[in-house]
Image (cartoon, rainbow, N blue to C red; front, side):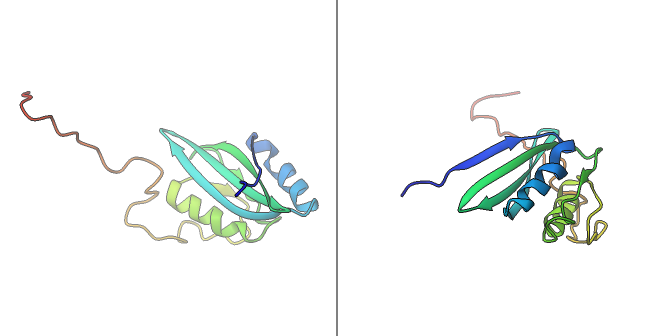
Length: 129
C-alpha cells in the first residue's frame, strides 16, 4: 500500500495564526495538535488534512512564551490546547474555552514538562565503586 504524502513545515510562532487562517480558508480540517519535549525544548505540531493529504505545522515552544490559540478558527483546538497546557506547562493565549489548568487533573503539575523520574543505571556485575 502506498503511503499518503505528508509535509512538515517548521514555522515561527508569529506565523501560526496567519498560516492556520489560510488552511481554514482553503478547506483544510484540523486533525490533531501534539507536543513533544526534547530536553528543555518543546515542539508543538499542528496536523491538517485536505483531500487525504496531511500537512503539519511545527513550532518551537517554551513554558515562558504563550502560543496564540487557534480555537477561534478551529473550535475543537481548545481540547488539545488545554491538554498541552496542563501536561506540559506550555501557555496558550486566547483559548475559546479555557479550563485554566483544570482540564486534566494530575498529582504532579505539568508531568510531561520536566523530567519527574531519575534513571539510575545498575552497574554491571563485578564492577565496584
